[in-house]
Amino acid sequence: MTARLIRHESILAVLTVVALALLAYQSDKFFTADNLLNQGRLMAEVGLVALAMTFVIVTAGIDLSVGSILGLTAILLGVFWKNVGLPLPAAMILAIACGTIAGYVNGLIITRFKVPPLIATLATLALYRGLAEGISEARSVRGYPEWFFFFGQGEILGVPFQLWLLVIAAIVCGVILAKTPFGRATYAIGANETAAHFSGIRVNATKLWIYAAAGFLAATAAVVFVSRVTTTRSDMGTGLELDAITAVVLGGTSIFGGKGTIIGTVLGLVLIQALKNGLALSGVKGDGTIIVIGVVLIGAILASAIFDRNKGG
Amino acid sequence: MTDAALPRAGVSRSGLRRFIGGYGQELIVLLAIVLLFVVVGSYNPRFLNDTNMNSIFAGNAYIAVAAIGMSMVIISGHIDVSVGSMIGVIATIAGTLAVSGYPVWIAWTVPVLFSIFVNAGVGALVAYMRIPSIVVTLGMLSILKGGLISATGGAWISDLPPAFMIAQWRIFGIASPVYFMVILTILAALWMRYSNFGRAIYAVGGNMEAARAAGLNPERTVVGVFALHGLFAGIAGLLFATQLQVIQSTVPPNLELTVITASVIGGVSILGGVGTVIGSTLAAILFATIGSALVFLNVSAYWLRAVLGLMILATVLADMIRRRRST
Image 1: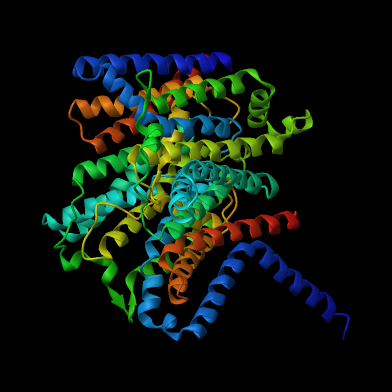
Image 2: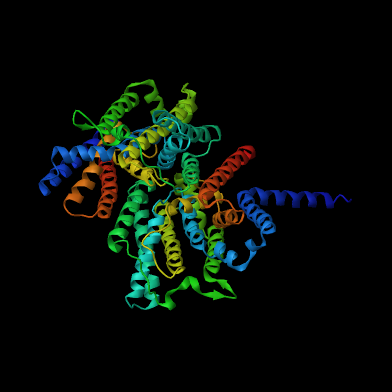
């Protein structure tokens, strides 16, 4: 299993390096510190969600509602601050708490009622986005104070704030998944849930934590998003779930569960963002880049499947 | 009461129970639709008038048609998250051919063949290369969506020839999409129940290795299912393209999820092997009815999706509780 993972990640790493080299050769604007840091800024929101999604998919689950949780949290942040009149820091904490609860509710539906994760989060995708639309009534909230823009536009030591956030979150998630009993429980559930249950792993509690964490990270991404674009709208984060899943799967995490690493997910994220940016710089329009991402996704999984088969015989 | 009468009554009652057990989910959805019509219709009789009936049934028939193919894919143990973008691509190809002066039958058949071909390719990657269908179709989603927007540049297609507008025909006062929906559902349901291929879909979705041991060819079945799904998506795309006077370069957001939800609420188990296309069509009608009912009950348009989401969730939970009780 480890050998397979390492091989997939090596393929991915080579692919990433080749892509970076080609893109640097194509445009001299690509390999500048400014551009790379800016790409890190744009990667952070999907990145935070993809980290949590890695855990979810390793348990053989899926969470389609993360984009809606992001939208709902963004709307609640605006409403708590502007309409309810809470101080902005309190509104932020409360909104993130609500996003976490939304994720926890996903976990409850999945563990208590035994609803397959795809169905459960399909339903809450509609519900949470609907709540965001209903609460906002299509009004956007603007006029946030200057200090709030730090989360989405500020820098620490010349590096965007959210890139620090993403790097720290990635390290924490990576350590938890690879080195702790919780991480091992996550793999065990994905590999064989019944066996995990009988070997004394608290399956439901672990899953609840993971789905709540997905809500928490989506909500954190929402605050960064609002701060970056300086406004809240109810359609924020639409389609984000598919971007996150693409990064995770490209990173070698098996959609059937039991296999996957945070390093793979980070590589997947970097490759996607590099492609998007590099192609945009070489004159491909925004929508053309998502075609390439689709091709890369299928190609990478295909390559890894072929290598796998050749070795397995 | 004679001795002979008793067992017969017993048999027919258990037969009824077996019927309800077999079509439990379909009956619940049908009941919900009837209930909605009665309640909302008595609250506001305009709910039952022709215009509204037409918009409920004809306006959403393309979702039901797409859900037929999606149900087959899910019953075979797979999924397709790219169908929404595919419907948009089909509509655009059809519209472009129609306004460029090609005969109408070419404008109809070329996009449908394209859809069958692409989906068969997806099926081949899934069946022979063993790539999970969600991964392949996630990639297809990006490719189709990106291709659609870059090709059209977001422009709408207008001035469509009248002969092309297949969804605007009326027979006996009923719009043609309703016929498409009803006839395709019945044909697909019969075919899935009685044909060898139809039964093979259930077998492959239920247990692939058991199906192979029983002499079926699971790979060929999966490719066939995806090709058929392409056919239904193609027809759905044509209905979508021709129901308005213009073809927009975008489809309703999350269309693929609406189609998947219709299949699942209609009783198709996401784990494969179970479900019928009658259920998915009824569920598509149920969604359309709920959406329309909320408007007539004066629910604010902003809250439509939240109420719909809540109802989907309630249906799913009720279904899980029912299933747990029955086992």
